[in-house]
Length: 612
Image 1 (tube, one colour):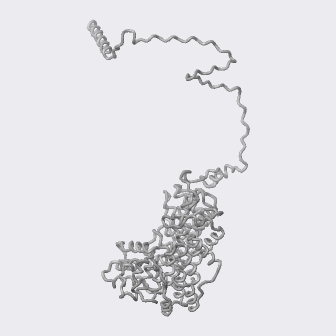
Image 2 (cartoon, rainbow, N blue to C red; image 1 turned 60 degrees about the horizontal axis):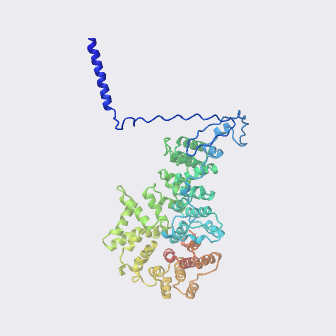
Image 3 (cartoon, rainbow, N blue to C red; image 1 turned 180 degrees about the vertical axis):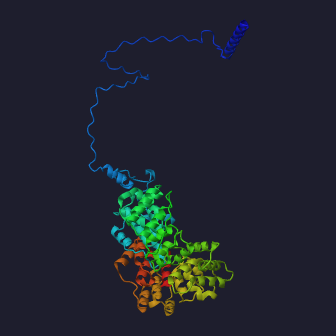
């Protein structure tokens, strides 16, 4: 039994050897070529003396790297000297993150990569190729004059078209006057835009400046712009860079709000609770801030807003209320300045009815365009559950465009205008219906209604449509006066027609006649001698020298439209056309016309007659 097993094992071993030999590669070289001769071993080099210098390595050959041993024990380190003003450990633990970053110099110096940083030249929103004014027009102006013009304007202008001209100048990409800090120039422009109710334009302007270049004045202007637009988190990049640079209470509240939207909601709410406890701001403002900050992160809390003990309204309070989606009480909104209406008309979180009511003031002042008004009423019309007076007005606006009969379209337009008890509301409704009025046929049957219809068209700059009525209007009528001023082709005015207009002028102190003569003379459509004779005849002063009139005339003489626009805004301040004088209108219209802004000059002159 053992012998067969041994034979089987030997056979298995032999088979495995054959298989292994078969699997191995077979050399094709003659015998001996697949076995190279062994390399000779190199002879040992003689030992080098201990003080001999190391031999240089052969070119291209490897060299050994030897780490030298230390010559002796290292010298003991001396005492560490700490800065004299280094806070103690207890003080560091009690510091806020902003204070800690300031002490340790950990605050970021910039929030924009070097390759993306912008120069402080041509700061603005509208380039010259987009309708803005030339960038170089302020470069050689006296900084003191520019500063006085911008800071001396309250932002409340009597003219819708004057507002539009000034807004265009302020939003243009401009170089700062030589010798003035560009950040200061941007800050003054943004601050004036805020006073005009143009929060969106002011916000866009400050966002064209890198945050690292903000001055304290530009920071304040940016904060006012973000508050007016209800965009409280827009100031957060500025707060991240400036940190504890300001210590006022609204700034501390915004620091806490920004911390919540930055992801640290627990610290945000704790800071707001602490500021509420110490009375940093009125309680209603702190509750609104908590509700605003509570919308971010995980620290959501229910905040009840109670208005029982609130007796007034502030811009901050109003903006924060609308930002959290609430409607301020109607009792607090009575008799407020028009700034709140400008803010409400553009607030996306407000109800459409509230925005439409505010638009009745915003459009007349130039904040809203005719197209924006139509869009707003279109949104009201598209609401499925729309009802009430504003829904009915939206239906009337649709009828003003689509009614089959001309009489029905005219009736809808006039119904939207309402009576003349509120001139601002009526003119806003004329802005609303400008394009609907332009669609009416210029017919002799509508000659008696031509004046208000032409005024509506010119409120939106539709002078081409308005001129279709030139053959319809009666000389000496209001429609004739408006077209005599708005005609882009010019033409001399008839003195007899002016007398007829004066005979039917029922405005206070025949102000419309004075504006008509001033506008025609400024546009070169009435000889200066004739204009002065008419001024004496109608008992008003057409021209009288002043520092302001000399400045705007000189700016027009040098063809500087930006400075002319800024000075024109300075001369049109007021809350109604009763504040405008024929002398100011004469210099404003004439300067704009000579400075290359003839269309704006014609619209301002026509608006003065329509609203005077």
